Image (cartoon, rainbow, N blue to C red; front, side, top):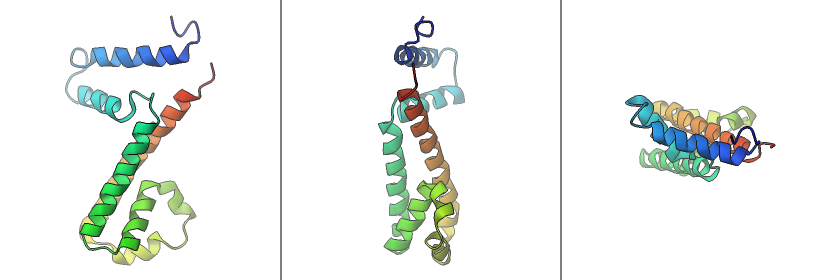
Amino acid sequence: MAIATNDHEKELEFFAHELRCKRGHETTGWASFLNSLFELTSDYGQSIWRPVQGLAFTFLAFFGFYIWDGTEVDDAFLVSFYASLPFLRVLNDSGVDSCADCAFDPGILLVPLQMLFSLAFLFLLFLGLRNRFKLK
């Protein structure tokens, strides 16, 4: 009904309600967990701020861990920043490469993990932007 009338906002709202209702009945186990995670992190693609908050939290949490692990603040900031926004790493000529010397054993495994979380939040952010500004 919402699709037929080109009411995109109602279509997204009904889709979110449908996914909520399926959770625990039709979707169980990992699918139910991912469904809950999708709701928590992006309100089923309807929120822009939740992915931004998740990206900021990811940056701050990993930045704090890098500092706690003994990395200097400047280097920890650069590593966390470029791991949070991996596409900016291509534009960087110094920064992260100079931090390769400051790499620490746990950090070698954490940077790809941070990139994975960040890419997921960036995907959800762009999904929210797409849904917010979709032409009717």
